[in-house]
Length: 283
Image 1 (cartoon, rainbow, N blue to C red):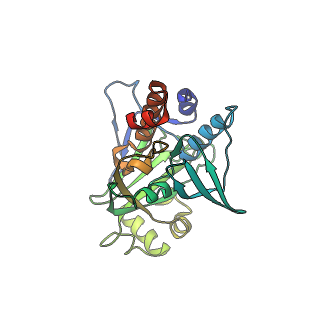
Image 2 (spheres, rainbow, N blue to C red):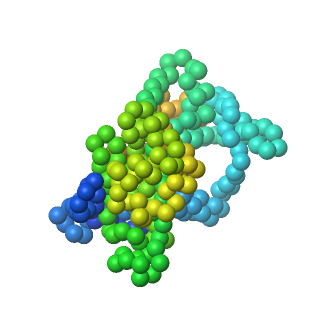
Image 3 (tube, helix red, strand yellow):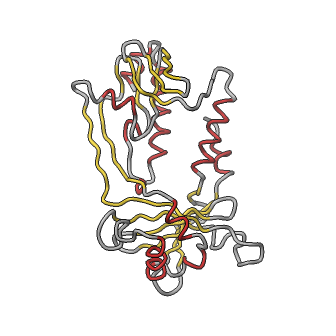
């Protein structure tokens, strides 16, 4: 989309990972022997906004919200949407369903014979927390509470916490814990239990998380699912794209990348074939 440099400009460069043991000092390990190489922490919400603004700037693009896909007519390329005013039906020569791991369009496809589908949930879920920015002069990395040039990881065997820096000086933290059993979301069910667990398992993070108990109580636990299905097209007019076609758990670091690759593949197919059905077959 020509937005690579714009997207990276909104990110935070991380040339390595910072490992936080239960006791002792955190230590840094670079991702590469080449100091010019790094990964980037980019806000998911910021990336969505960037892409939406670029789409809205296109003369033939109309962006509409509050329309939930409910039903699809593959033969006519028609989708029915649930809106605050009732149902709307729209037809198109090409319908691209990029409606996520729990895709409504794929759900209709699943009811048709010879459509293969599997989903597999991990025994772990995730919950987001925050390390807020600190006041100027409050530390060597202010407004960051920790070194922003690293992906911070608290590895604890069968579970972990990570923290990625944001441009405003905060860190987005993510817990990856089992659903059940010792050290699980089921066992650590209250904010007070979470604080006690953090003091034991992530002691150096506790002073940096003044809203830990409130965040733990308020923020939901999300599921981690892998989705596989085929075919990704139906009726010569409707195609699945991204997580709707192939959701993957985050630990491979390829979820967004795979979706962008779909965009490239679909565009290549549309450029190579004059008719949409032939392009979707190639895709």
